[in-house]
Image (cartoon, rainbow, N blue to C red; front, side, top):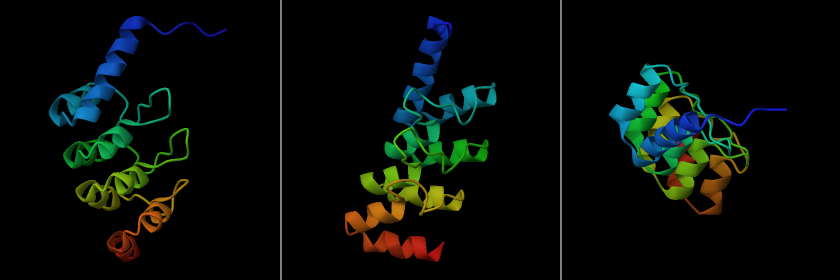
Length: 130
């Protein structure tokens, strides 16, 4: 049997995920630099990179990748940060993820599939260049 998580730990994790969603890069990376895992995931398998990418925070994504976060971590629904950024139309985030080694073919649907689905030919060309 597993123990219930410590409420203080849950509260701290919630705060850190909120920092990623809000793009508060300086505060977010201070936690990572202090020992919070760069690939910390929530109860849906979303990483800090996924949350920052989905909400359009390129600087936060760049800082997390620089601290060892995975660019292609797939969440519980098979989604990658890159596909989420394509869905949301976050071009700056897309470029940062590609520079960080994200694979446009990873995930379900992949970033390539998502770009095709929404007719984003300029992104397909960008992916072809990587």
